[in-house]
Image (cartoon, rainbow, N blue to C red; front, side, top):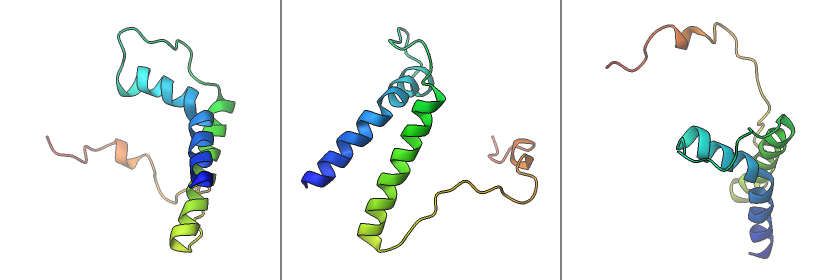
Length: 89
């Protein structure tokens, strides 16, 4: 439990600036946000890397499987989904 708690604290620490910005500007559109500038790309990459590392660690521990989370360029026209409504009104 000590290791898991330390991992959770580290994940929260690394992702804090991204989480606060998203909470105030994207998810909830706060009327009086406390953060004016978005996180830097460095902060964003650090948060993504930390989430991926933590996920891989616990997925391997719980399932015995390794997950490859690297970006993959999809074949075909990835923009097609934006040309037609996929949820009917």
